[in-house]
Length: 215
Image (cartoon, rainbow, N blue to C red; front, side):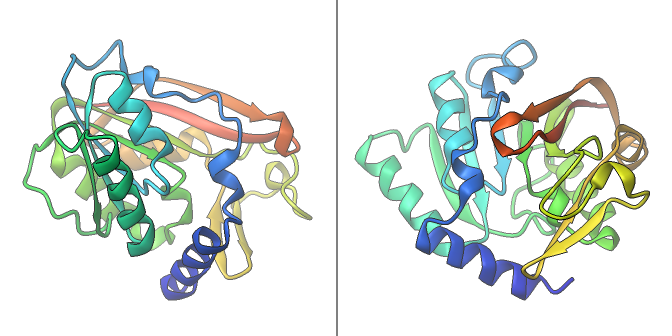
């Protein structure tokens, strides 16, 4: 899948306000990290979008960097940071999760809500390597990705598809199984817990939420 087309899609969605995922009533909350990370812990949120979860993490006492590749939304988020006078707690940067511009072991935790499932399969290992590199030993990654348990998405049935790959409007989606996540991260992380969250308002769209601890 051509990332250029995907980026143009997300730029257009944020510009026109058609980013419906931003307003979906997810049950996932930043508080999922509270039992595992100390107050003031440094968290990297990759694919941060409009900053919904990063700002929530700040409210919970964490320090946060939001990584996003859409320049316009990064600038808007940083304006909000400035207005709310919280620049000592959070900032957003323009960047690429496949080449994270931070030193090794910079973060206590990494959070990804909905980025990995848009990456091409051949880039999954690079994604894991980069996230692992910037995470401290004993740190955590909290993932929420589209789940193969989704019965229907648009005109397609993920649960009936053995591969879980889907393309719509030039955007690639992969619906993950727990086995895929475990195999992908198993060399560097252990699964602490997982669950399936169903979004009834989106036709029982399912997300696989996984907490992984770096070995």
